[in-house]
Length: 153
Image (cartoon, rainbow, N blue to C red; front, side, top):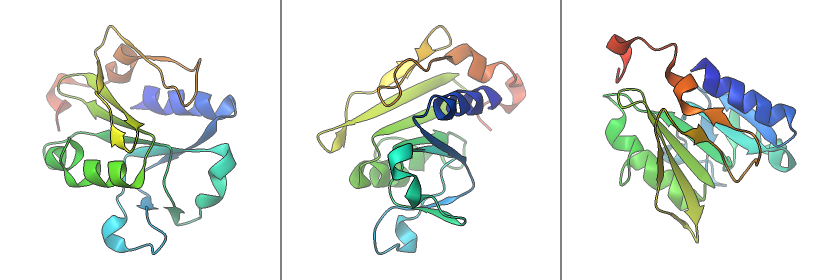
């Protein structure tokens, strides 16, 4: 997922936020309870909130979370799943789900406390976010280096 990280690095270079690649615990609530500490594949925290990034965890809610689907985690990441529900409940502004098997990226923007109708992006689409306008990534580039046999893990 080098192209995804490159996109996040361009977001950083543009001054929008700091990307964090997993594994890193995200302590979503002030009490920092372990059951509310998912470990996303990647996330981004806006610069004005960078103080929530510590040496050992993110102590607060990131602005963007990226999860890559696998057979073992698929149910948790999709709507109604444990991680999906946590990210929505704690107010992650944008949730991206990368499906290696289908070669899609699904964007869930948070609207009025709930994830709105998702935008499903295929290989002919361009990934954009309202969190950092002007920083785009061709979806096809995210999957270029994947072997067909590994898709869907």
